[in-house]
Length: 405
Image 1: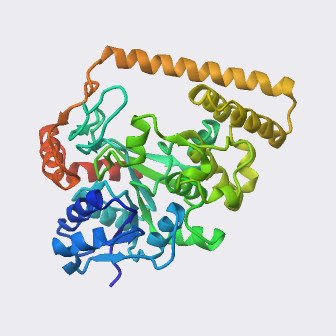
Image 2: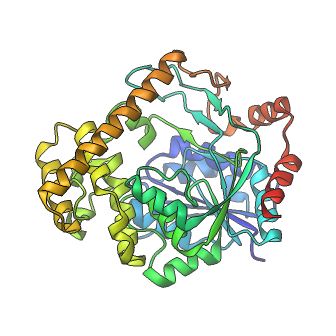
């Protein structure tokens, strides 16, 4: 029988998180669910821990250790290849999903919705999460967004992609998403048919979002927690919080493979949030929609890199010159664009700082539940908070159905 939903979890050397994420998903009483885990770890620690807690006895778990060495991109493609469900949801190994996710998949199947995106209105920080400015202030907390209200919307994918490219693809918000999204599997198979694999470049979440924008005419979003992203000390979120999400391309597993495979012209050659997002977006466009490459805002990317990584003078300058050649414009035209984007980014940063100063606590005014030891313990607090707000799946389903009528 074809499962209704596949939850895909690629993992590598993070058993201390993944074992709880897997346990939390298998705790859902849904026979139509399958959990697909692709483990490229250097040791069998996760396998042994899963055996110890009895998870391998659950027929819904499809745990595999690829025989060949895979980088992050390869592991994501491998786990998606093994998914059999009508819908697929990709999450990280320190994340979880809520009990409403299978209900949302059933609703989407009945209404013919290809992509359903739950906006992030609940997020969890593991006890080892630390930031450079606030230390362990967020550790062990489950946060809820102020916009958790089940409001739903319907969006044009091409318009969303155009907006993302104007912003130099600096985040997946506002796009149809596979990572913490719900995607009909036939869309993913169409992507593989067109390009040979599901995701491209150095950021699978960004690649999937851009690719889905090209094959899915529209998508539906809702401010309701169907997944709960986790921020752990060993994650990219944790590295960013400690200002450690930056380094040489060849020294980080996320970009190492592209030293030899090639890197997008106009993108600085170092590992950083800005560069991996841009590279993944451009690499995906290159194989699926090369005519759209000219819509990418290189000026905004270079401006962001100059502001956020001023120490990388040579790399930023090289990318700046490459971008000018790609765009076919002169220095006289290129320089004003860069300065305009820098002014815009500085202004946006000042606004964010002013808003943060108005709410100087670690939570920034968001409601939260403290002292949660791992992601498997968030289900109860999420349910309690929804009841406090007077929300449930029936209300969320009504909001979703309204935007389709």
